[in-house]
Image (cartoon, rainbow over all chains, first blue to last red; front, side, top):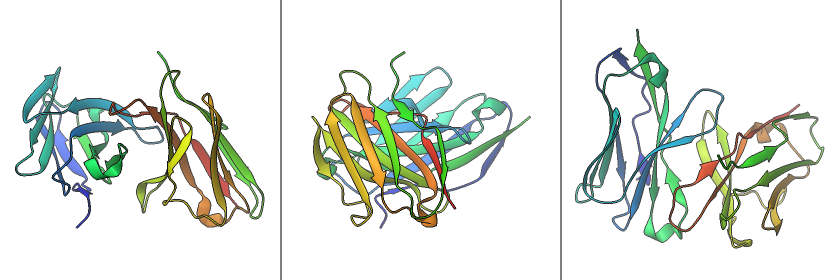
Length: 112
Length: 112
């Protein structure tokens, strides 16, 4: 089992819709969870951090964490074409001595 | 905004040549990471340092790759000799403690 799994996509949503990106992880000792956005040809950019169960909202973005199910998600409300990018889920697993384990990313396409 | 600085941004060289990539982490960050990203493998951790000490370089081909951190403001990744399969984007990232990592713009490496 891969340590951090994401659907590779592409996930295609119409402009204005909600995009839902999902991520599962294998290490139950994981403490911190992050979402990075990576535009084509650019570097990953941190957009959300979440550390405890529940929802965390920041503008149009909501991160959701369920440690019992080992599941973290990112919702993007009112999706815009500028949200089209690859979204990387990253987990700070306890056994990883502080480094992040990255999923392979989900490619999101928002159609005008 | 504080940024991770990587040089060079692009490098094209012939097989067998030595390649050196440099990274200046964000001032105050005590952890520095080197990643390689390809379409096939996604983001792979090559090595990382904490307080300039190497913590893990298990992701790095030992026979040709080496990573060092001669001082707190400079990390280097060397490939000698380079091979076409080393062509990829190499990212440096820095962080502090359990805080999320921040990425540089990357070095796009092409080995002919």
